[in-house]
Length: 503
Image (tube, rainbow, N blue to C red; front, top):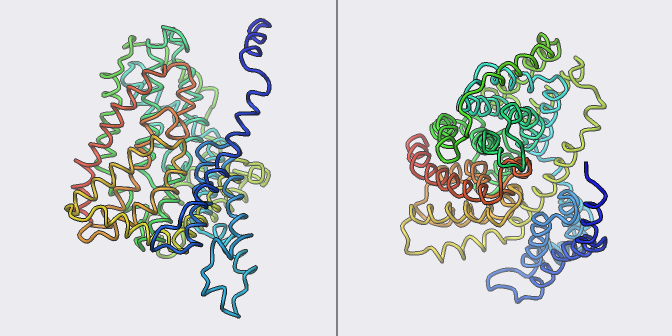
């Protein structure tokens, strides 16, 4: 418990208005950056209204990075500003001169266009699946079963955590929800059984190893499955919009499969070598997991129904995309869950993360499409291509991928990274003759999950595990650099040749 002297010391160290000043600075920073860009000369070859749109877009991205307000508020603000001043930010002089053109109606239609995007509804539907896992405790049961049978040794416990994430990932579009709602609450109970405590020298007994394996597994599975990370679905929409290349669930899975299997099988061992636990064997963990499973009892009716529903959705996503839109398949399963009582309507309307993500991604999709609509992406592609002239197409592709990967150091959100950089990178690559665009697109989108390992803020679960008390700052940055390099090199040496062979 925090004592009075600690509270007093904290109050002296951090005056009450210090936080407010910082928040005000962060609040006005996106506005200031947008204004600065607006005042800069319009680049040659670009229309003024496209440059103005880009200025607001950059302000939104800066807001998403520093988050002085929730991400959905930042995105919605950008949409409203552009729609209100659309004659200077969105529409060309030719469009405005057309007497049949209705400015107000067209502005509103653009502003809400993201809310009709099927990808946005697929994200929402998948969040409802996660709610089913949580309510029925089926996700917790899966993790405990793995711990029961694989938890005696530290290394096999690392594999148990990895396989638990692997089982949940295809049905959980938020790696933050998957880690924070299921995986972390379970493994947080494990280190104390070994006498390994947070923020203590004993953390290295096993807690540090388990937490690093957990965040690494979350990053790998986020790349392995299209439906395992929300920005994956955003990337899917951007690739289709900009390149016209459609990536199915099965294509994504097959493209990353060899590397995904290799990383799943070797990552706990690599962590065991680079960040070894002091305790190697313990008999208490399986007993604890068995006791927790006994408390859960047999599979409930709702757990069985949930299992049937999510398997049905997965089968429709993989095999029936030609007959039923994936988002519609998700909505069908939601209706079935509601009718059978797996979820109730209050579970739907009270799911704040789902509605927040729905609003956030809807605005980001509209903003990203707007960049292409005003011609900014096409202009950027020409400029980027001119800089890469003279390079071999394969070298250019590698340079673009490495730059895209390493620039994640600047982002605290995979969503912001995807929105800001993926459209531009795709457009630049498409303008360079000789680049295999299907392979390049697959390389780009499957890198989104694994790149989250490089920093303590790189992806949603990172702050959860970083804040656990088991991963000191210097250790996290060191291990992030090592594993980030391993993942990047593996993409180049394993995924790239495989994708060229397959696609």
